[in-house]
View 1 (cartoon, rainbow, N blue to C red):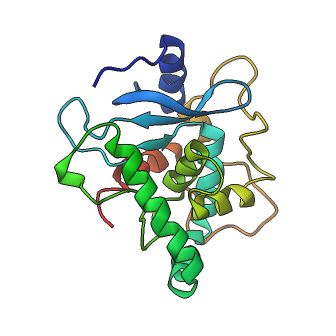
View 2: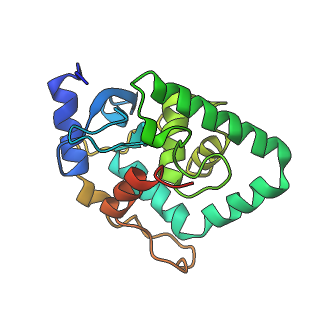
Length: 206
């Protein structure tokens, strides 16, 4: 798939990820400073591999903030709520369908037909994916992503730049989220590389 992403955006995302982006077709959301926060990716990589993660969170401060919530066990809690809250479950199902529709605009990949990402529509298995979807699609599309963004408001927000002043942040800068006064989580926060790898894999199983 041909990409018309400007070179400066590709360079910024490369710096954020610590590697060139794969199958990037657009910037789907930006920080208030203008740097990419979420990229949109083709459903098939250049080497032919199916890639279900249409919206990919790239901003290192955002990745770090979400990783901290994941380390605290939030995914398990949210998955449990899906089983108890029919309204939430229905909205999450709609988010799953919206994700599939967005991906279909980029091409048909039979190997991942019906598989979205992040655990949708029945589980929560990658908050990074769900936050990326919420940022790209806007409020009201992904209820879990919206809820996580609200939880992050004091730590990271798309309306408040946390990027370094002089250059795009690298993935290494997000590897260790800032310490807080809260007790240490049972499981350590993911590094940026682990979080990005999870986004890439989150849609391969439901």
